[in-house]
Image (tube, rainbow, N blue to C red; front, top):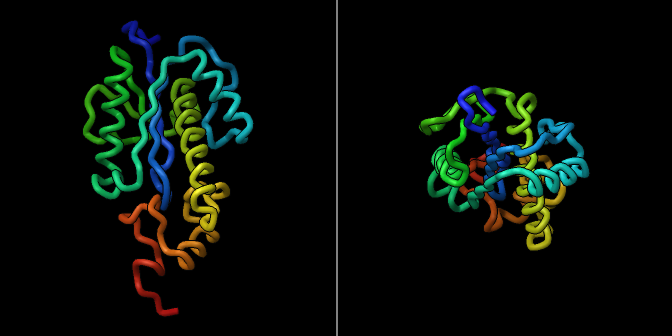
Length: 188
């Protein structure tokens, strides 16, 4: 609880930078203490899954997702702003803390760089967003096995670049994200 008696809603996202898949945002209000919460990137996949189940069983939360075509159509910043507002609407009467340093034009929102590493509610949001997105990418790897989404989750790895050069973009790739060698001529 905060000094003004409003509960704290931690907010984080996963998938801002990948070449494929959704942007996933989560807001979490913890209703009980969960020991060991930390930034999702610092946890193993197995631990993230365990924490995910604990969080959804005990906390108030809301998850928002934007598909690649929404990101292409509206831009990543507008999607982030829409997601922040959707979380505020779903989890009203809170104090909101978003990981990072930009509010994307959204009112009634505090930001803190690295909040996912030091504020339990933001850590919990980080875990919900990352696990939700990772699960989506594993499902998409079954539909588009040639891209290896289950390994790199849509991020710009060497293997992902190689698949893009060989197969082009799939319907779940972000067309507004430029890919060296695919969107721009190269000398080699």
